Image (cartoon, rainbow, N blue to C red; front, side, top):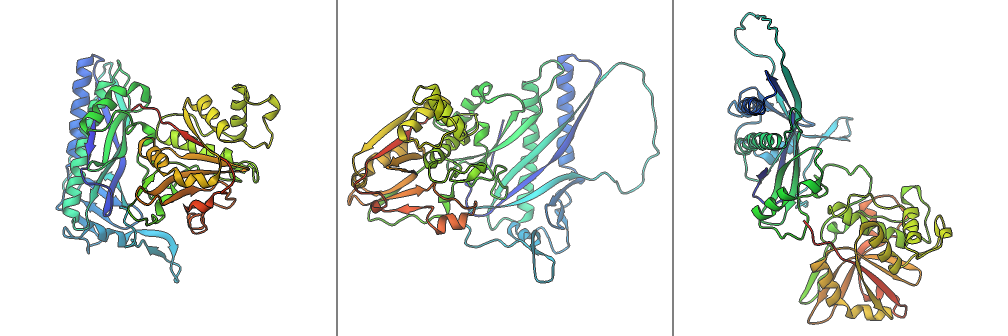
Length: 472
C-alpha cells in the first residue's frame, strides 16, 4: 500500500495535492463478493474522473488554476506547458502586505536548501459545455444499500528546478491514480461485513535514496495491528527492523505547516557545524520538541531545568513512535518518582530539583525506557568522553540529559576528532525563559555548539543516556 517518489527530499519543490473524492456505491445486496465488485467498479470510475478533462488542480493562495488533462490548460494565460514548477511560487500570496496595502507574493529564498511546498486543491468541474439531454426520472421499489464516504486524497511528488508543469503534473496525476488503487486495496482488505474503513494516506521521509514515501493505512486501526504491513514495508525499502519508520507518529511534517502545540522542533538544524581537524559530527536522530522554563503556564524558573530536559527526551520517544502517551507534566513526573519509591508523597507539587538518576527512573516508569548512566567526577573529564558520546548518538540517537550541581542541560550531539581529541557539544538549554523565537534561541546560544569550557571544570556530572527500544 505504498506510493514512492524516488527522489530524495532536499532542494526543489514538493507538489502536494489534497482534496476529497466522494465514494458512492449502490448495493443491491450485502453479499461480500458483490460488494467487492461494486466497490472496485466505483474506484475505477474515480480513476477515470482523475484522468478526465473535468479534473482541476487549484494552486492554494493564488489565482492559478490548471486543467492537467486539457494539455495543461491554465489560468492566468502566462502559465504554459513549458512553465517551470518553481515559477509557480511568484503567483502564491502571503499574508504579508507591501507598502500599498496589498498582499505580497511569496518569495523563495535561494539560501534555503530545503524543498519548498506548493499546495494544490483537487477539484472536479460540475458544469458541462455543449448540448444537454433532457432529464429523466425513474422509480424502482426495492430494498438496497447505499454506501457513501469521503476519500481524503493526499499525494506528493518531488520536482527538480528543471521540471516543467507538463511533466510534473503528469506525474502528479499518476500518483493520484496510484493512490486510488492503494485505497481500494486497503478498503477491501479491512472490510468487515458492511463496515468499511476509510483509507488514510500518510507521508514518510525515509533515508536516502528513498525520499518521501506515501503509505495508505486504514483509519482507526491502531499501529499495534499494522505490524505485518510495516514489516513488508521495511523489506520493500531495505530498512533495518529495529527502528520505527512507518508508525503514524513518524509521518512527515511539511515545513509550511505549523505545529499545533506551539513547541519548536529541532532548532539545531539551522546551526552551522563546528570545524574540527579530522572531526566528525554525531547528532540526535529524529525529531524532538524544545522544552524550557516558563512554558505551559508553569513558572519553574530556577528549579525546573531537569524536568524540561526530561520533557524534551520524552517528546523524542513520542515523536519517533515508540510511545503514544503525551509528554508528562511536572506533577506527573513527581508522581512517577513517588510511585517508584524514590520520593515521599509530599514531593508532588513541590519545587524540588531532580537529577539524572531521577530522570532515568521516570523514563523507566512512564515510558518503559531504560537508560545508561555516565558518572563524571569533574567537568574537565567530559572532554575525554568523545568516543562514548559519539557512539551513543551513532547507535541510539536519543537526547542526553546532563546534570551537575544545580544545573541541567540537554546534549543533542557532539563534534569530535578521534585524532586530536578536540570536542564540541551541541547543547539545548532548558533555562531559556522567552518566546518560541528560533532566531533568538539560536543567535543567543540557547541552542548552540559549546566547547569543553562550557562545563564547570571542578563540578561532578551525571549523564542519563536513554536507550531506544529495538522495535519497528
